[in-house]
Image (cartoon, rainbow, N blue to C red; front, side, top):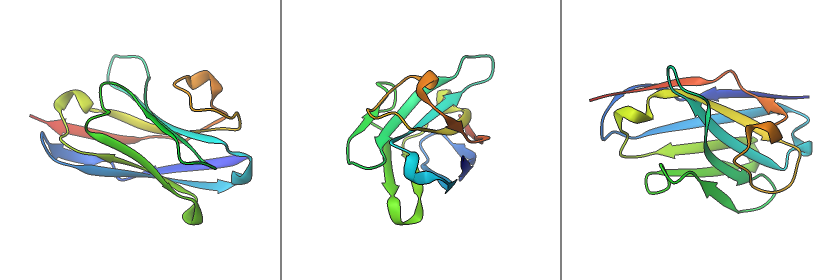
Length: 124
């Protein structure tokens, strides 16, 4: 069992930056990939970023790849999402997820564990 706890969300203005954190607890040694997804009001959940938990590879959605960065600190069992130049359309609940399957992925169906999410609101 792996428990994921997100933090760092909040209300910011367009153009601001924000860093989200996802702390993992439990059997973290089973994790191979950790992702960030987001869900805006009235929309489906969408992929944002993916990182190999035991490697260095990352993958970002086209909509954020020039503004967001995903990273990890394995010593702290924590994954980060650094978000710069935020736009109102980035407003969403951001979810952290973990997968025991190898390989970066955009698919929520490959995730075994999910956090409860943290709300990011970007005002114009």
